[in-house]
Amino acid sequence: MIRFRFLVMLALMVFGLNACYYDNVEYLYPDGGDCDTTNISYSTDVWPIINSSCTGCHSGAAPSGNVSLENYNQIKISAENGGLLGTIRHENGWSPMPKGGSKLPECDILKIEAWQNSGYPNN
Ligand code: HEC
Image 1 (tube, rainbow, N blue to C red):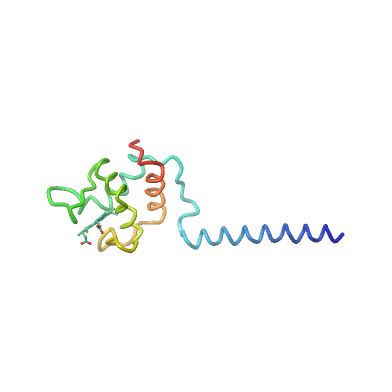
Image 2 (spheres, rainbow, N blue to C red):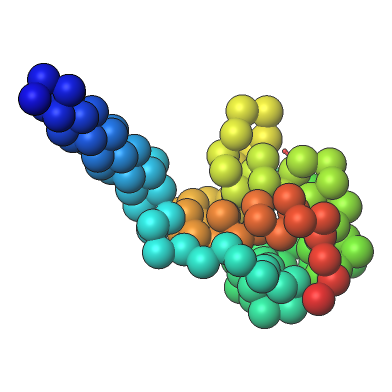
């Protein structure tokens, strides 16, 4: 009987911890819970985000900060040197982007991060 109670306690503890874990994820990533970061594609996920929030300043003959984000190769270079995620995550040491605008939605940031983590596929 004692052993059974112990198991019930243990089960409650495990479920309890799980609940905390999920709460935390939602707290840290307000949109992160429903964010689908599987099978991220450059052309349908990454490019539309950058094209709508970044290329206004980062394209043409004199791009802001001398950073061009007009095509795959240029975006990959920014991803490789850490600037792409550093700026959109507002990390220390990087100028926060989009400059003068609000931070990108967390799900967009997670998608760009997933693209970077999967080795910048040009798909
Ligand atoms: C309104 C214009 C504007 C927009 C929109 C903008 N940027 Fe910038 N960006 C700048 C300027 C200006 C700089 C030069 C540094 C500075 O003045 O903060 C810069 C610098 C950068 C740098 C180099 C940062 C560093 O610290 O070395 C990166 C990378 C960058 N931007 C990425 C982005 C990305 C990604 C987006 C879209 C999410 C974006 N920018 C949107 C104006 C802009």
